[in-house]
Each structure stands twice: as C-alpha cells, then as structure tokens.
Length: 258
Image (tube, rainbow, N blue to C red):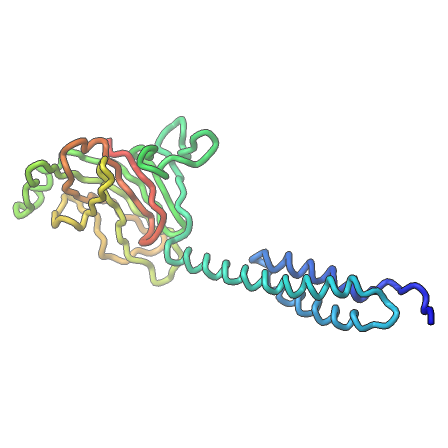
C-alpha cells in the first residue's frame, strides 16, 4: 500500500543541528560543558526521530552518528584540556620573550617569527627578558672573569681548576603568579659549552657576592636580583650560552654571554 512521500523529519533535523553544534562546542574549552549537554540530547532526539512513522530517516541517522562521534571527540578534547592545564601548572605555561634586549628588536622577533632564544645558534642578547604565567626573568649581565670576585667573597671558595674559569651571571626574577601561598624561587640556569655540554650552578659549591637567594618564598609582585656562579671550561668561554627557564619545568631560552 502506497503511503505517499515521507514528510520531513523535523525532530531529526533538530537533532542533527544539535549534534553538530554540540561537537563544535565540545572543542571550545570555555563552553565545552554546553557541548556535553547538547550531545546526549541530540542522541536521544535522533533515536526518537528514527522511529517516527512516515517521516524521513536520514537526518535522524546522521544525528545519531554525529552525536556518537562528537562524544568521542569531546572526550578526547577533555583529556587534552586537562593535560594542558596540568602541564601549565607544572611548567608555568609557555615561555615567551617580553624584551629582546635590542632597540631595533625589542620583542626578539626575527623575520616575523619569534625565533630568538630558541636555539644556541640564535641566542637572546644580555639584557633580554623572558616570562611565563608565573615568572619574569631578566639576564642583566654576565662576568666572564669572576674568579677574583668569587674568591674575595669567601676565602674558602676553590680556585678554578686548570683549564677552567669562574663566571657569574646576574639575573632578576620577579614572581607574578597568583598562588596565595607563594612560590619558592628555584633558579633554572645552566651554562652550555660550545660542544653542547651543560653545566649547572649546583655542580660546584661556590659562594658569589650578592648571590641570588633561592630559599625564600616569593609572593605576587616580589622580585630578587643576584649573581649565580659557574665554573666552566676556559676555551671559547665567550661563545657559550646560558639556558634559562622561568619555571621549574618551563621551556628554556638561550642567552649569549658576551
């Protein structure tokens, strides 16, 4: 028996639109909760629309398929957002150049792309500033012949080993984070030789004049400036770089030392 042409399935069309909208919303962090609400509603509406008599099935089937796929996408995006938030909490977020240390290149921009400091071959100049969401760090100066000053600070400081020199990097750390309990200042600074070997300031026990304090809790707006000593190979010392991170696990940026 001919029942005539099937009517447009309005409920199926609404379900389809809601499924597409829910999938899109689930990919946007600020409104992803709306996506999680829309997707199951679209799925249920699609099921109901599928069994409506004498009405088209295509929109209903599409709504069911898209709502299922959208839910999987929403789950993946939720994992991504949680992982990113966790990473940002540990690292302080992305490290950016806020002052490239040059009048002609204040942001460290080269050829329209933020490149300076990403590699040892293209380091930031002394005087540059980097930051993430918690810390602002400026490399103020680097003294490549600091053995006499380090010895004068404490007579028990060891003299440089044969073939080595002692240097000092002067840095300023400012805490701009919002943690009410504050955060400890842990300078993440290494000297990197021309051969690629990294040397931490903790590798040798040296006391520097005006040493950067790293044991005090810092609260929003607090800053500290001081020296960090290193003992490094004398050969090509001026061609080495400093690897500096604003946070404990944050991204590094490289600075020239001369």
